[in-house]
Amino acid sequence: MADEEFIEIQVTIADRRYPVFVTPDELPIVRELEQELIKEFIDLQARYANKLGKQDILAMLLFTYARKLYDMHLESDTEDVLKLVGRIGQHLDKALNK
Image 1 (tube, rainbow, N blue to C red):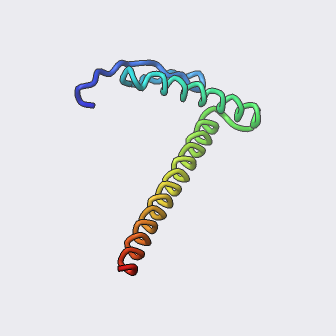
Image 2 (tube, rainbow, N blue to C red; image 1 turned 30 degrees about the horizontal axis):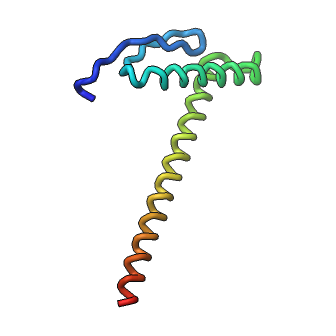
Image 3 (tube, rainbow, N blue to C red; image 1 turned 90 degrees about the horizontal axis):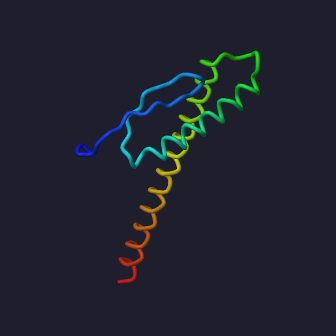
């Protein structure tokens, strides 16, 4: 990745622009994420109209994505443990059947 060229793009969320450096391969993913965040921001803003400011809604989005990432991490750990248990079981079967 050290040899890859980065391009600077502007990502807009909650009417604010943020500079982001991406590789050309990452560009479509970042744009898709931007659209997803905008949609979720608008949904939350409508749900909590006149109750929360933009910064509060952004904090809620951050927490939502952090929770999803945490859940994915837990699922990944569980899958790894199950694979390991499966391999141990195979080794035990081989050892006991000798």
